[in-house]
Image (tube, rainbow over all chains, first blue to last red; front, side, top):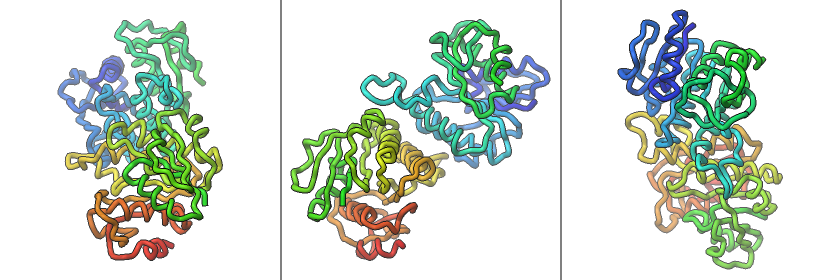
Length: 213
Length: 213
C-alpha cells in the first residue's frame, strides 16, 4: 500500500512514519519541509513539501499514492498559512492528482464553533478556527474520501494501545496511540466520510477501528 | 429601506453610515463594538455587536433588515477571529434571521490563492487568506444573495466619484468611493452572486453600478 504522510517530522507525523515503516508491505512517502531530518528506512521515501508553496508546486511535490495522512501543523505559529491554507492546498493538490483517501489529524472541538467564540472561549480558539475551516473545506468543498480524527490533548506518554473512538472517555491521548489510530483509519474504509472523536480509553486500537463500521 | 452596516466605526463603515444617513428614506442600523462612537443622526440606530461573540449572540444583536453591508475588519490584528470567523458568524446569523442581501467588503486578490502562496507572496498574504475563506464561505456555504466587492488599496483621499467596476484601471480607491459603491450595490440587485473588482477610474459611480447588469 502506498501512503503519503504530510508533516513527517512533526510529533505525530514522525511517529506515524516510524510505525508504518515496520510493515514491509507499506511504501511510505514522508513529506516535510526538511526531509533530511527523516530517519532512513528501506520502505520510506522522504520528499520535500512546503505548505507555503502554491497549490501547483505542492501538487508537483506530491508522489502518486492512494492514501494520505495529514499531520502537519505550525504549532500555533502560522495558523493561516499552514494549518488552514496549507492543509487546503494539499487537499486540492491531492484531489487533482486523483488521490482519494484523506485522513486529517484535527482536534477535539474543531467543528464546535461555540468553543472558539464568546467570553469563555478556549485558549486554543485561534487554532480551532484554523482547523474548523480546514475541516469544513474537506467535508464540503472536495470529493475526497475523508476521515477527520478529533483527539483530545496530545501527550508524550507511551501508548497504552487502548482508546475510545467515537466518544471521549478521558482528556488525553498518547501520541503513539494517535499515530496508530491514524494508520488504522488509513488502512480501512469504514470511516470514510466520518468525523471520529478519540481519547485514551479501554478498547484495543484494532478492535476500536473494527467497531467503526 | 432598512439596512445594517457592520463595522460602523471603521474607516469604510463610518463613511458608509454617514453617506446613508443623508437619505431620509434609509433606516440605518449601525453595528459596532463601541456603538457610542457612532455620530447621532435621526435615521441611524446604533447597536452593539461583538464579532468575538457566539453566532447566537450575534444573531440576537442583529436588527431585522433586508440588507447588510459587512465592512468590519481587525486591521490585521485578529484575522482568524474577526475577518474570517466573525464574518462567517454574521453570515450564519443573517441567514437564520431571514436576511437575504449581503454585501461583503473584500479585497483585490481575495479569491486568487496564488497571490498568498509561494515565494513572491503578497505582504498582505495572511489578510488575503482570511478574506479568501470568508468569501468562499459566503459563495459556497450560504444561500445569501451576496455581492463581493474587491477594491484595490484604500486611501484617505477625497472621493472622485468616478470608478472602474469589474476591472482594475488604477491601484487605489478613495474610501469615499468605496463607501458609495457599497451603497450602490446594496440598493440594486444587478450584482447578486457577483464578485466585483473596483478601482478609481473614469465612470461616475451611478453609471458604473447601472452597467453591472
